[in-house]
Length: 323
Ligand SMILES: [Zn+2]
Image (cartoon, rainbow, N blue to C red; front, side, top):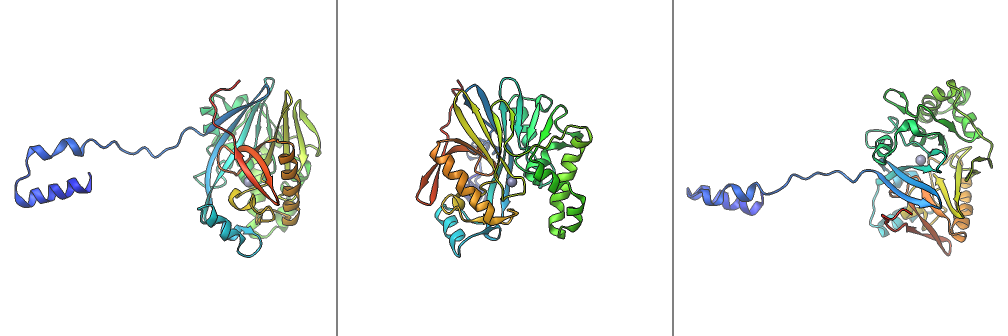
């Protein structure tokens, strides 16, 4: 009910003159608010490959404490972008249908990161696929918001998939010795990786790879170290069109595009992570590669343009014409 109608009604009641003429029709006209978003998928073509960004949801990140950069940089960049901490950050996986194989790059958080995430499976179904159809899961790294979706409420989420990740990340995150040696606040990352990956390993369907491998026709793994020991980006190419799925090379576009030196506490080696970001971004901008980023605003698809020591993000234009 609107406040003006409420006032009118109150006044009428006070005067004892409330009549049929001013009661129900206006008050019943307002539709209830729905407060949901569109289904969490967005699709583009890359040559003959179909690429679908799948939303796992969003999570509020306290970036004022997580981001590390020159004094004042983070606050200034956030303010300039009309943002403030915590920043609502997307978690995105990318589904590539090559025509021969259905390949999922990163799986979202599953149950490991709270109730606002874990929606990648629903997005995949909304996008017209079933989890059983996924042939290969490629992981950029083994942090919980990338591996958690490997497990569903009833066990393994991708019943027919082989899971691939860099052998350095597999050795690190699946090591019982490293779990034991880790500080208390880091143990959850190891436990999340183990709970997500070990069921596939026990079924003989976890196949770590060496950096530089061509994993499938048109999909190559490239070492991009720093965020984790085995952090990997995936180069995807079809009919001369090229894309780079960059995982966690960037978390907060408003800050780290302007100043790529800014790192995040989740980086296992922050200087190395910043150096890798500089190298990969410079190449992606120069070669005009389509980027798929796991944590930029959904759908996380766009191009980078270099501007001095900064970058501009050019999101893909909306399209309904998938040729
Ligand atoms: Zn991540």
